[in-house]
Length: 195
Image (cartoon, rainbow, N blue to C red; front, side):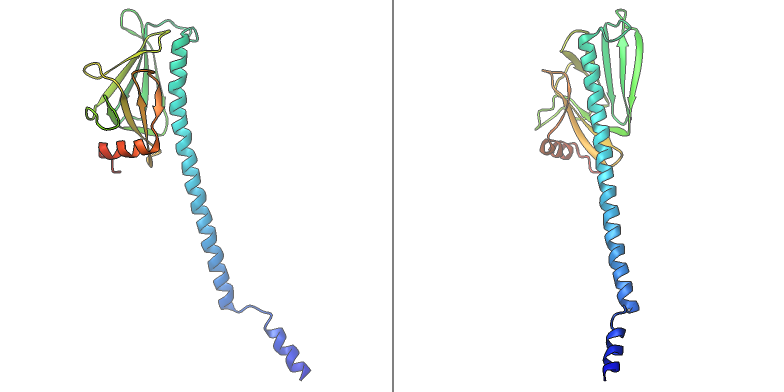
């Protein structure tokens, strides 16, 4: 009788093949979920990095224009060009006679998806192909134009081909600022951006 009980208890300590397969499937599902969540986090960090690079580049150019002495070449105005569908922001430094003394291009993993002027949060003048900003040295004001002078320019920029961010340039401070999430969602909806 004792031998039967010992033999019976010993055989119950081992796992069956089905139990081991179930455990492996559960571990595999947990690993896939962890990898997927890590990939989503990596994408969020990449998007945020590009967005911050755009804001930083624009702030740097704006600040250097105010100080003007931080450039080693002379210019009369700095022109910033945003064009719909472009993957770049162009910076042109013009001399007194209107010729370009220097041109820089800022590129990163983004595309300009939509541009409008006179944006108030409720309405706009519709989409534009391009917008130019003109800054004069030592001056916080800028001139914003497409065909005629307009203000409160707004942009939708798609980053890493998977996330839209909204930016605006207000006539009062002429700096590129990120829109709030709610305002951005409304702007994207109003612009008809679906992809």
